[in-house]
Structures are given as C-alpha cells and as structure tokens.
Amino acid sequence: MILGRLNHVGIATPSIDESIAFYREIMGAQLIRAPFDMPVQGVRVCFVETPGPGGTEGTQIELLEPLGPDSPVAGFLAKNPAGGQHHLCYEVPDIVAARAWFEGQGKRVLGETRIGAHGMPVFFVHPRDMMGVLTEIMESPKGDKH
Ligand code: CO
Image (cartoon, rainbow, N blue to C red):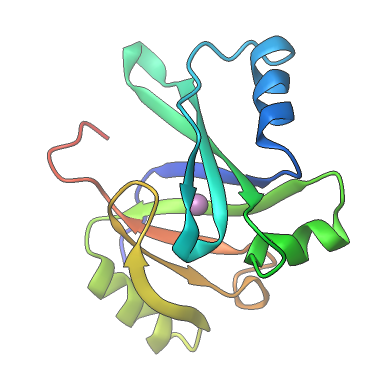
C-alpha cells in the first residue's frame, strides 16, 4: 500500500444547488464543474475545484445529493439533515494491490471495486476500521499530473 494524494473530500448535501451557491458566494470557489447523476450509486455529484500550489490541480470537494430514498447518502442525511463530511478519497498507484492490502489487514472493504465518478476504479473501507473515517480508495488517473 502506497498512499497517494488526497483526491477529494466527499460532502453529503440535501441540495447540490444550495451547496453550489454556498461554495461560489461564500467560499469564493472559482471553478465548479457541472453536476451529473450517477444512478448506479444513487447519487447526484458535483465537483468543486480547489487549486493546488503552482497552478496544479488541488483537492476537490465532491458534493453528493441522494437521487432517492434508497441512496446510501440518504441514510447519512437522515442522521445529519444539514449534510456534512461523508468520506475522504485517497489515490493509490495500484487499486488491486491496495484492496488486497486492506483485506489482508482485516479491514472491511464495502462491496466490489467499481468505476467511480472520475472514471477510475474505486472501493470503500468501513469507517469503524479506519479510525472513524469512511475511506474511498481510488486508482490515480493515468497520464495525469496528479
Ligand atoms: Co468520493
């Protein structure tokens, strides 16, 4: 397991539109991507860009709004109606090796490795096995300057 950059912070929200207004008007976000639906994962997603040093890409904020009552984010919002921090996503160079590592450490990997919102394979690890943080592991985009 080789820890890579912090790719994004996942934030659950009852309204992506309200969150976009907040990041634009209060937080001064200069670049907010177009929201899109990920029906398989039951969420609507929007990426807010935070710039990195020297014009590099920084860490993103991933806004997550449930598409329906069965969404995994719906349960989170039931407990946290105003929304809040949902998960952290770290990049790794090799998703297969990373999954084998966490499983070998006895960590509960949630579900299958699947293609995430960046078009790269991801998996999630249970927060109770990760010092309280729901953790998404994502393979680094190839040919990317990250
Ligand atoms: Co994520």
